[in-house]
Every structure is written in structure tokens, then in C-alpha cells.
Length: 455
Image 1 (tube, rainbow, N blue to C red):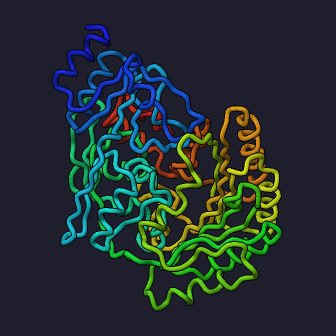
Image 2 (cartoon, one colour; image 1 turned 90 degrees about the horizontal axis):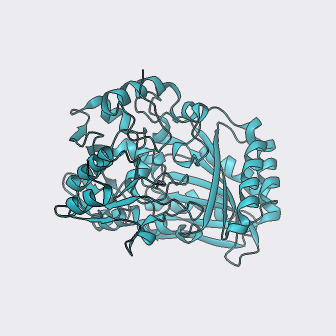
Image 3 (tube, rainbow, N blue to C red; image 1 turned 180 degrees about the vertical axis):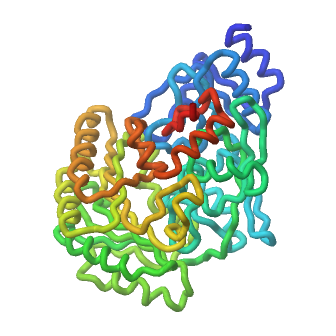
């Protein structure tokens, strides 16, 4: 077996993308992911341009016993898109969206971001569920669940996934749909990156916008308990046309603490004013940015709050109800947040996303309720200790109010044990292990919330 440098030199003759070693000038920028807290150093970065490149990279890793990580958008909070001393398969150059407006489908390359997806689909007044931050990667978000503005109306992103072109651990390329490789199709919809590298994905599209009603209304933090109770009351009445999130956040001035409700309405335009009126007329808001907005801009509205390179550590858990005691705890913990970039978010799950049986897809979080997210974010390494401690302490205080389930895409680097696996996949763990044993028996793709092959 040739040494790695020689093997890279040989592969470069046919490789369509770029192979980056640490001595290459582009390696330093390429190794970084969205979360600045992550500081991993791959031995090789394969910036692929297609399935053949991905397959070659997988085989090279096998030949040289290199661990594989897969980077799409690079947003995974736990830094699982990168690897120390291994091979990063980087799909960031693979960004394209092909829309078939007549068939109401879109096929996208594995490195595509949601902002790019929305830009193309919205030319036709079409869209599908896809995150709330436009710089997030399509593939990673979808394979791990895919919450977003449209999930009450159209389900999770994975519920709209029609097919995947997947590069397997042995370098083979398979087309995965409900008819082709049906077990793998079931597993991919929620099983994360455990089964291979998604070189392309195909989605079902729906009529969306282009103009919708959405945005944020915020009140002084002194009103936080009242705002969260209003949010709870609104969620009890919300229909499939409405998506609601509550947040305890800091204003753009960097000092003023606020309680906010973020809303999106996707029903008939004539019904929009009535739907958002209870939010806009509540008390005396400090900020009101809720109204008509292009869907693509709504999906990008929160981007600035999550800048690339900021240091992040998150903890989240799902609660089927939002009690007064839980509200009090959320507010009390937010008031101790050490960084103005830190937030506490409460994401409401209802509608179409919750009308799917937990065993119908690998993604098992199908209950109606509230995802409680402690989002610790800060700028510099000297904030690491306080930022991590605040998230962990806050998460611990919320345990009396939560259930068993957790949202896979929010699990941080230290959420990788058996309890995290059970919380993310629920009753689907054993079936997932059997499918893993069939398609990745050596557990090549293990730098994730890992599903070990069934013995």
C-alpha cells in the first residue's frame, strides 16, 4: 500500500474536485466548520464534485484506515462534520438545485444550503420544509429530521424526501427510494449520516408564497413570563397554517434582554391579519417585525443571530407541555446567561409533523409539544468555561419538565451515549441497527450519533 501522499497524488489525476493536505494553502480555511468551538485537523480533506469523487474518497479512507467525517453545510452543532487525523469528505463545492415545476420536485446536490434551495424553488412559488436558518445544509438537516417553518403544514423535511443517491461504505452508489432499497429509505429519514454519503437528494414541493406573513415581535424581558404564557395559549389554538417559536434573546444593541415570539403564517392571505393579531396587539412591544415578507427572506431572517465562527454549545429536550413552573425556570435561567449571544428557545411541534407514526420513519419525535433549547453562544475562547457551564446547568434544571425524546440535530458532541441514541430514535433503535449491519457492517460512518451494527 502506497503512503498517503503518494495515494493522493495518484488519485488527483482523476479526481474532479480538490484533495487538500495540511501543507496546502486552502486546507486551513476548509477544515473549519460553522461552530467556532470545534477545532479539528483532518489529515486529508476531499472536496468532491460528484458521486465518483465521493466513492474514490471512501475507498482511499478504507485503504489507509482513516476515519471518515462528512461535511455538507458544516452546521452540525457537535462538530461531527470534521475529524482529527482522518478524512473529511467535503461536499461544500456540490451546490446546485434542479427544479421540475411541473412534477413539483427538486433535486439538489449534497452540499446545497437551504438559502440556495429556497432561491431556486421560490422562482416557481414552490418550497418545502427546510430549517429556520438559510445557511444550514440541506442534507444534514433532512437526514436528522428537518424542522422548519412549514412543518405544521407539510411535515418535517424528511417527510418530503423522495429519494437519495447514496455512496455506501464500500464505495458502491445506490439510488434509495420507497421502491428501491425501501429499508434504507426508511432508515435515511431520520438516521442521520449513519448509512453513507448523500450525493444528491430529491424533494416533494408545495405551493409556498412567494409572499407570506412572518417575523418577530419582542417585549421587554420583564414581560417574559406573560409572553411565554401567551405563546402557550396560542399554540393550543394553532392550526396547520401557523408555526410558532418563543425566544428569550438579546436585542441587536447587545445589551437589552427581550422575550420574543417568532411566527410564520402560510394559509390564505386574507386570513393572515387575524392569525397574527393576538401577537401584534399584546401589550406594548419593544420591537415588531411581523408582517408580509418573502418566504426566502423569512427563512434567512435569523441568519445574523448565528454567525459563522461563533462558539456554540447546545442542550435540548422535548416536553409535551409547557407548565408555569417550566416557564419560570426558563426565564430564571436565561437571566443568568453569561453572553448576549446566548438564547433560550421554545419550538412548538404540531400539525402534519406530528401525524406520522413514530415507527413510519427512523425519525421518532412525532409528539405534539415543545422543544426546549438552551443555546449557548459566545465569541472567544475565554468564554468557553462559562458558556458550557451555563448550558449544562440550565439543561439540568429543566429535567423535571421534559420527557424521553430529544431532537437529533441538536445533540452536541457529548450527546453520543446509549441514552442519547434512545432519546433520538425511540422504538426504532433495533431496526436501525439491523439495517446498519446490512449496509455498513464495519461501522465506517460512525462519527455521528452512532447506530452500531447489530451483532
